[in-house]
Length: 280
Image (cartoon, rainbow, N blue to C red; front, top):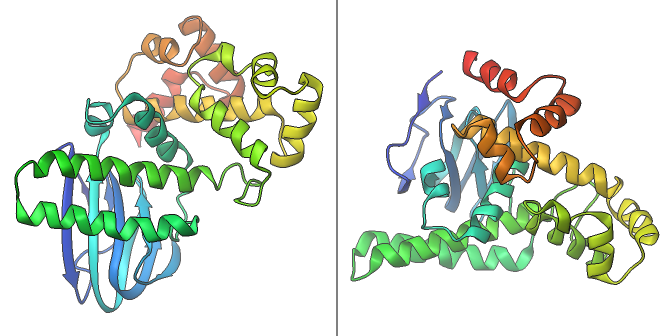
């Protein structure tokens, strides 16, 4: 099975195809695929989903995927890697939103747009990116970057609405606000302690615990732990950051603290986890 690489921070491709020229393959980068027209089937990690115009897919590194084209399909591809993620093209809050995408994409088939207003927003954004890319007009590179960032944030919002498993767009508004608050402050441990969250939302610590579990089917501590764990795994998978750098960024007191946390959750050290990935 082939594995493609990307040699630029991001790449835009627009193609109209009658058949997919590639068999199942993997990427070393991330890819957003938007269907402008046509029908067919998306195959990802041995699962399948029938696609049509307006569907948007997120493919993450090492996903095994292919498209089976039924009727002539116009694809928009946005490919990006960790160079773009870490560049100054994305503001800090956008990096955190993008990171949420990378950690919580479920690697299953299907359109990631779950929020109806966003379905209406994405197509004009994609069409504007294509127009700027093809016309090469004045300031087009700056405009393309802004539009790409907009698309990334929209995708992050839709994925955030899907998690945890028991959270949906019908979940109580305050519960969604608490989840968003935790996501935004995951790098600041003192702000996501129960005392700080309860004070921020003006509710008692005892009630906060019951309320959070009622709407998410897990405790707030479990949610924070799982979220931090996914962020650590992402850095081990997709970056060459040293353990001390990961520990510092995610609010651990030192590398030893990070090691104890990771070993308790995963049964191995972060170094062993990364080495196992390299041997695959």
